[in-house]
Image (tube, rainbow, N blue to C red; front, side, top):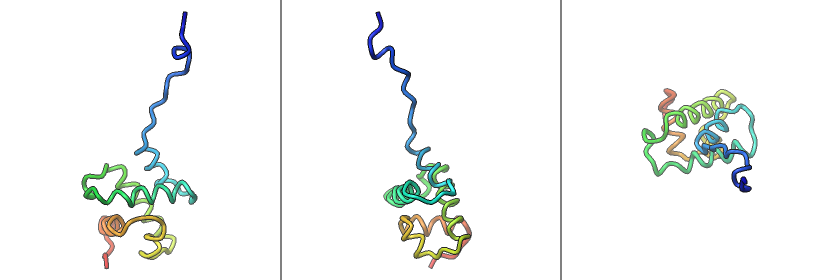
Amino acid sequence: MKTTEQEQAPAVAVDPMEDLCQALFSTEEGAKKKAARQTAGAMTQRPWPQLPSRLRSAIRSDIFRLLESGKARGQLLEAGYSAAVVNQALRDLGHLVA
């Protein structure tokens, strides 16, 4: 006789870091994107090189897309990123940091 737990579908592993990266790589703007930017911006207690490389790539991709759409550094901060994350991503992208 099976128990209720055995009859349930197997749990799908959820990777919050992958969800964060997917939101940042997405070209759609919205609440999920803003929350992802704020989460990434709050990760400044860890040095940039210690962040997962996929997350750094997602941040650079999102910031590059914002720059291409004409956003200034101040608007990147308003989008939810911290100054430290914006500065490092801009350096990685070859931009001068003021």
